[in-house]
Amino acid sequence: MATAQRTGIKGGSLVIAIIMAVFALFKYYSSSQYNPILETQQQVALSVDQEIALGLQSAPQMAQQHGGLYPDQKAQQYIKQVGQKIVNASAAKTSEYAFDFHLLADPQVVNAFALPGGQVFITLALFNQLDNENQLAGILGHEIAHVIARHSAQRIAKQQLAEGLSGAAVLATYDPNNPATTQTAQIANVIANLVTMKYGREDELQSDELGVRFMSEAGYDPNALISVMEILKAAAGGANRQPEFFSTHPNPENRIENIKAAIAKYHK
Ligand SMILES: [Zn+2]
Image (cartoon, rainbow, N blue to C red; front, side, top):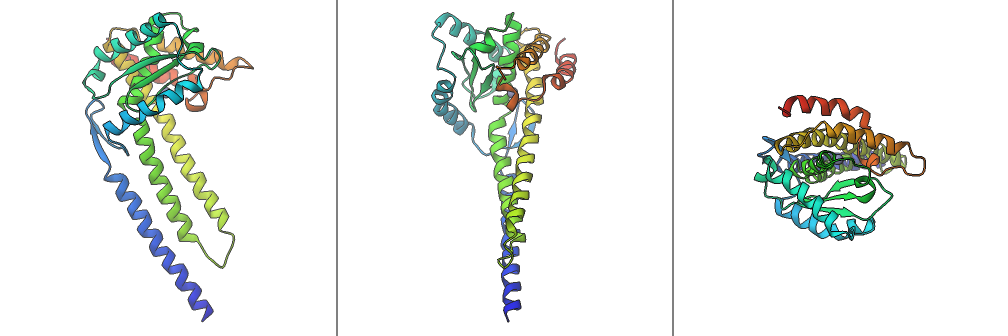
């Protein structure tokens, strides 16, 4: 009797696990939207309007984390001018995003990032290391690409899928009479993290390629992006100044080959 009851619990949780997994997959694949600039379908968890709202909402907090906006208005205008030039003279112009570009006062952390919907930031520490406008265009073009390629909305969709599937996996192997289930939960967690990390790296390489395309369309020399990678590499060498850029961006060495291929493709 006790054995039969135990089997019953196990079978029930398996059915629920399968339903959970199917639901997670259905939700993921039904969130498909066409990206006209990438000319591809993609799975995204947010609408364009939601991306814009989310970006605007979190912009002040993100700026605060890097010492707020740099007070020099001339420098701010320069960042905006270069950013808007890339947007207006490239395929990015056809998107619905309202781009804005900001210089952050942080003199130490070498970083640049984009929030969903079009808010783009570069720190003073990175800006100060640049030698010319082409290099700045390379960084801003890369960040514009993250927005256009909808990487945040895509990552949220993938994360939801991974969470749904790992939740189902835990449930499928859950045995109420065997307390060793924590191990299963840990394995599921590791799988979820691996999936999201892998996509993060692919996002960076895609942004490098798309950034080269946008800056080339706007008349900037994309070869400058290679020298930006050299700057990032040198910045990583400083013992007391480990750039945050590297926690989210792959090894600059590995990115250079990818950038060279994009230059051959887009820089005529
Ligand atoms: Zn990036």
